[in-house]
Image (cartoon, rainbow, N blue to C red; front, side):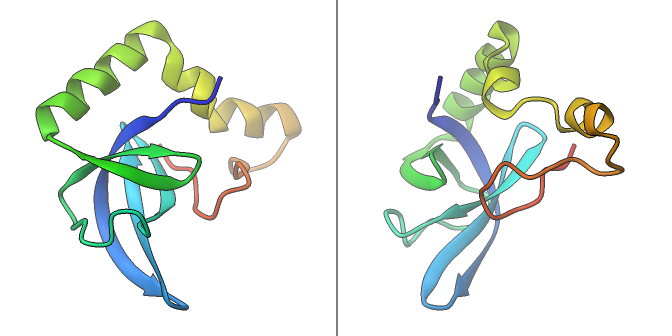
Length: 105
């Protein structure tokens, strides 16, 4: 299943003419394209789907949604556990999911 997940923008930068952000999804950090929300700023929340920020979201709604996804195990399903994946392959660090950005915990 592919979810649209709320995340908090940590920082924003221009990369080769494309606005990109580092976004925290309840402990998992990914790089996200801001082309649909070019005025999004650090500290704000957005709903992200397949690497694109699609809609601005207030902090309370974002937190409630992340808590619900966590309770239902949907964040695990969407992002997986990078540490378990690394252990299974014998790597010292978690693998990336194909999107730009490092998975952290």
